[in-house]
Length: 185
Image (cartoon, rainbow, N blue to C red; front, side, top):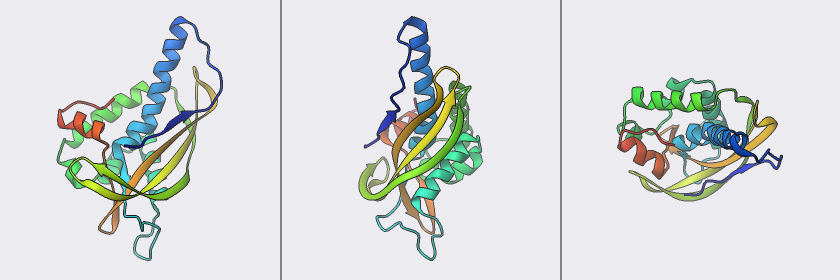
């Protein structure tokens, strides 16, 4: 599974507890992007540019899903998850995992989310096998009291068509966690 995460090059203090706190907060803010999206890796056929019937590109769909997640609009996010993955766990358990993730990212302020690239790819997903996908690179700009202002995370995720709509997909580690009734890290 290809997932790229890069932080900007602002320096961080490297001593004891503060470094551990910063690393924990960075992981939490990364999870806001990665669990919020990678837990919803979205897949779509290689021809997923908007068509007359689709109305929405993979890029705009991914940005919408991330904003729904940032705003804790879990009902909207759950509705965009592939039906085969919705059968792996309950909505109530999935939402409790999302709330736990949100608690880890306390103090995080998201300023913007945008898609910076989109291209065709082919990825293997649990339960669904190999899928032709649209890879979407997202960029999130955020601030956090301990991490600083004007930080940036980028992540490449994947999106698939399900009938006339887009549906979310889980990467292997996310699927494995939910299949064992655990929250993904």
